[in-house]
Image 1 (tube, rainbow, N blue to C red):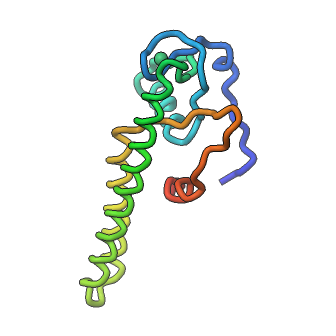
Image 2 (tube, protein in one colour):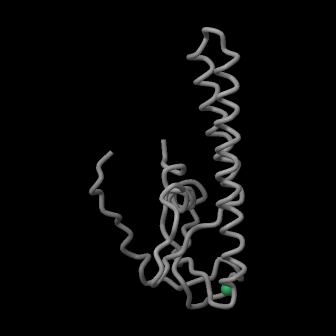
Length: 144
Ligand SMILES: [Zn+2]
């Protein structure tokens, strides 16, 4: 993976800003681009052919509600991955020699649990002053 790959989204920076909570055109904290947003944009551009060139923000009025949803999403994501890992550990302990099969199956379960957590995906926002907590979270969400 080339690490210094620059993002090239020339037209997007001047689009309008839409709040992801209320759907109105508003000023607010900008949503961080991550691999999930990137994937969604890719789908919009290449599959549904419906690129929406607006920037996603969270407006001030909705921030508390957003924060609640984001926190619950993060908890859910961790819980899902932990369930997957426990499941894999169980598989391994019952595998009796067929470890490779158990690992492949276990990784599949973890990936599936992670995808399930994305159904309620709430993106992060750029915090102006406070650094976002949770290096551990980033470890869990690393793309395979
Ligand atoms: Zn809003």
